Length: 172
Image (cartoon, rainbow, N blue to C red; front, side, top):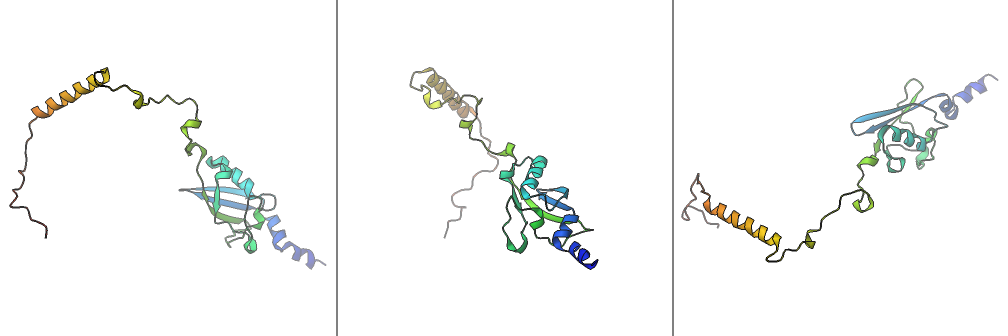
């Protein structure tokens, strides 16, 4: 009679109830460790919420790469951690799952400026009156005249004289 309870303790369901689970996420160059998770009472949605606290990536923006379900089952947010396929990296009774976390923190996501309040007004330069004789036109013309005078009065010092036309090789 004693053999049956001992055999029941070695089944995968009974063994997973006794062990703790550690999830290690690799995000960029950092490793995020979530130790002491219960395989039966914790699902991937709760893991994503823990990762959100540590990284600032909302759960809806997280992609967990490298986690597979047992017997090829689809892994979703409601999947308990006990249904994840172990890769044989168990150490001392604790199951360790390593995966890659992909996602963008909320503060780095582009927001359309038209949806954001408190931005400065943009001056549309097509609204400016740039007719001949206007103040803008006179200022522009004065700058153009000054630029022309400056370029005419500038001396250009030639360091290496250009080659003559006879020394340039003609293409075949």
